[in-house]
Image 1 (cartoon, helix red, strand yellow):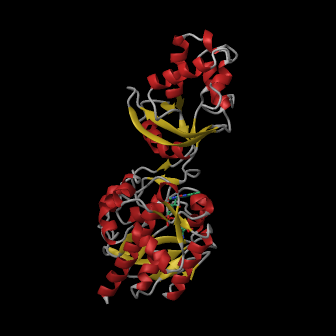
Image 2 (tube, rainbow, N blue to C red):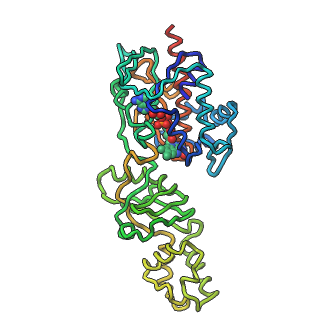
Image 3 (spheres, rainbow, N blue to C red):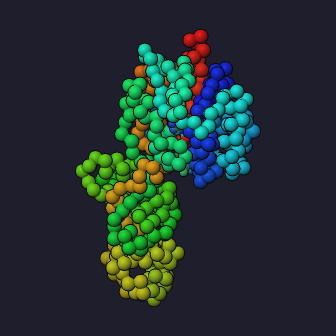
Length: 408
Ligand SMILES: Cc1cc2nc3c(=O)[nH]c(=O)nc-3n(C[C@H](O)[C@H](O)[C@H](O)COP(=O)(O)OP(=O)(O)OC[C@H]3O[C@@H](n4cnc5c(N)ncnc54)[C@H](O)[C@@H]3O)c2cc1C
């Protein structure tokens, strides 16, 4: 996006890509269909970028999610909206998005070098001087845009190479950590794989602090795995768990699952009473069937020390209240996450305090620009990271072109 924007503004652009393909990570986003952006209002988009989303307000006043949509539609890539505002190509093929961008590169005569890794960025007297390739070649340039991504999923090419180049220019790299990442747990029910493979739909998953206060809650689907938990609700909660653990005060973080987020515990209890009254002689496993997945029901019965074959009529109200409590708030602990390499997104990066918010230029080095995941900006999956990358990319490209033009 940065190269397209710079080319569109008339700059002579060289795009250097380490891999044999452009846009490899973009192509695998959104389950391989390319989640180009999100159609929610700007305030909502910012809310879904918990890692410095507010920094993007000024950038969005220049180029935002609606501009991304218009950009692709002008290129003939029809888009469609799915749940939670997520925008995808109508073709369901990430290739339509990536190829349309590659076509724009040729339209603006951007020279592309693939299978070419940058080794270093050189600076001289407070401004950028050149880019050095792994094979030793050097390209001098008035402006350099660093768009090398974070450290997650390195097989796509993002191996964290850019942080050292930013540091060399005097930039602060805030702590790097995995976000949008599955969580690990050593709870006995995870170790014994009791719930492995079980998905819970539309539950409210919370991260709870040591005082019992909810830090964050997300209502989405989740899944139990052989190492812990995963799925959309878990990915969204993950950065809050990682941050709690990073404080170093606790080895475990408590999480809570509310399987009935639309009603309170008393209403749930009354619902159970009503169900029992309808068929008091039936075994409770049959009375409560259909209220939640069978494996989860059996699991919570065990937790509440209830015999699934017991008749509804003989169940004490105390037991039923305990059961309703578990349905509303089954708590368990997690003790970590998968690695930053296995995370969908890298948290932390080049400090946004040192970046001009409307231009993406470095405040410390003339002619140096940053965009995308290398910046200390991270959002939830759902098109928010890509929105941030495309918006900051557009600004970096336009302003790098203007900077080099003004020097001439
Ligand atoms: C599986 C998966 C699914 C995702 N799904 C979503 C989603 O649904 N919604 C969402 O918003 N986000 C999603 N993301 C995150 C999103 O894809 C990234 O935030 C976004 O692609 C970042 O863009 P970027 O251009 O900054 O970096 P990248 O896309 O990582 O691109 C960086 C490029 O720089 C190249 N490069 C790196 N080092 C060098 C070097 N030394 N020399 C030359 N080139 C180099 C790399 O090869 C790469 O092509 C997902 C990520 C993954 C891994």
